[in-house]
Length: 230
Image (cartoon, rainbow, N blue to C red; front, side, top):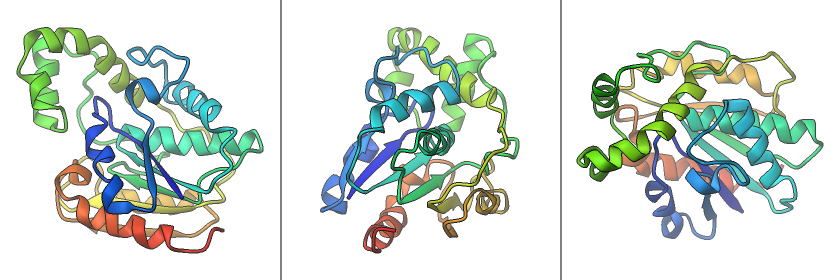
């Protein structure tokens, strides 16, 4: 079994790659940064749907059973990637773990960052959390990263759900108990997007509970990966 992880906007690979030993024999892979958008410029994503098509190109030949976990922006990309794979008649994930994001048809709470002036932009990024401290602490790194990071926020902020067939895979939504950007009642609406079964779980923590409190997340992944392939 494989687990493909889709990080949040500006997210690093490291929190997910460190899960490998804890989830064995599940093999963890990260569709993030350069790996997330094969054949595309990783610093200049166009839209959630364009990113999803690039991911579907990468996964179209996968024959082994796999799971998706997408956090925040990554949840939208994982969802749209699953739709893109289904449209192509390709194998999709057995389970989609949607963490830290409201259901795709709902507007995302929270401030809009993509168009803010530089000083305000980085103040909001810092307040949101989830960005590596070494990036926040070095002006040269911030300058280099800013165009790509703005583009990822823009992709999230301009996303508009297009009605379509619900997914056939199971969806497991995980919400942080203190996450104002993805409250549990709005994460519960993910159930409308699947015919394959649904579960909602809350995890102690804020928006980045997947990094700050991964234990309950990993336990849910273990339980789902132990189920027979559907």
